[in-house]
Length: 288
Image 1 (cartoon, rainbow, N blue to C red):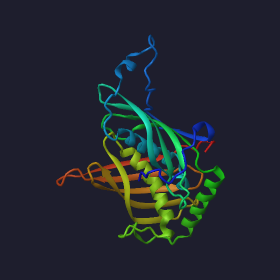
Image 2: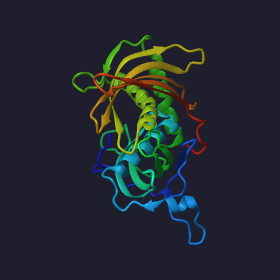
Image 3: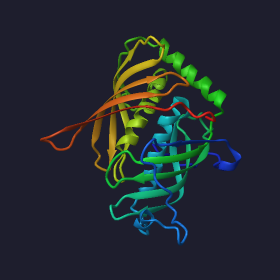
Image 4: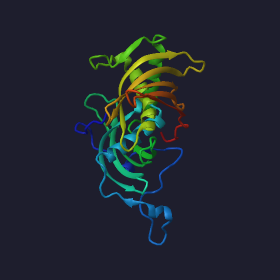
């Protein structure tokens, strides 16, 4: 969840730190800024600056960008959460689609006590009216050195491989909100896979948090990858509904993350629907 930056160090400048950039594979947003006079196209004329930003739109765009960033990075040791939106603006067209430019800070999801670290991100997010799966172009400063991130990912990988198979996990966190340290790697890896689902489901008006995991089962694979199924309960805002999603995740440190999911939509008491998706993250960028 988003957390305030009160205990964290100042954000780093993009120019002073190595950066990591990801772009969604299709439907990327065009530049938001108006074209120079005399060079405008019919597409440019469709867009006007949104003078009255809907409440929470910038935070919504930042969360969507981070969900996509986490999925593409594919590293449970380098998960990021939103700290604070610093600035942003939006453009709107007649179809009520919005392009959002913004700058925000993000911090590592798992930090040692008293050692929270902030990094700066810039993103452009394209919301297709009320449709899910916004197009994202995001760049963030690097918070973990590549070698340290690889070491932590392999440590998590080894821990997962040593767990009993099949896993006998009822729920994470437990009924008191506690996550046993031995189960933390499962939670982090599940959070990574859930990032893809949350990005795919996000719209201008709906966003999601991971509430709880249940029914975790790990499978043995021929290539030594971590292969496991779990059910995640996603808390949907602003409807306050709890959406159960069954997720199948395949992960090996340094290789593309594979995710398949099936969500049960609670539309009305009389009717329900399902939603499915799958993805394989492209090979990670050389500078990550």
